[in-house]
Length: 168
Image (cartoon, rainbow, N blue to C red):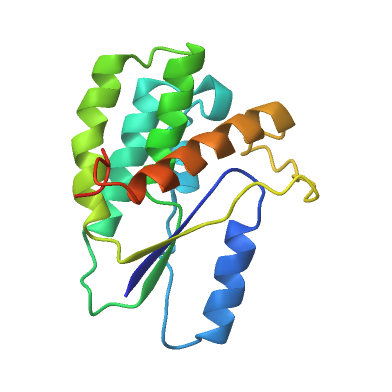
């Protein structure tokens, strides 16, 4: 089974995965390389400062990673292409960079296709009681985190409808 954990910054996704892997030791694994490695390797702007270059590099990495595994593999991902599209949509909505509607339109088919390679997605919602730790890789602004979370909630609601843009 291919599992992904999605959600906004600092809500315990990595901790959940660490605990999951501990409980399922020897049965499930998680890829060693993550989207964070891509950001660091390419010195990309991210979060509120994200760009088409950043979002495309992360999406290509995540989509490629999801397509590497079959239903017989037991893998858990820290984030997935749906996370990527949420941050891209935020940037489009807030006009914080160069992301435009054409870019979103180009990304949606890849997000939709890669979703076929994930069997289960856990959404860890924003919890205001959790203090977001500043690790120089994540945004700690509560307003930003809340808005990103709302986009995740909307995608989650859409996934349950017959008109989902991201799931077929």
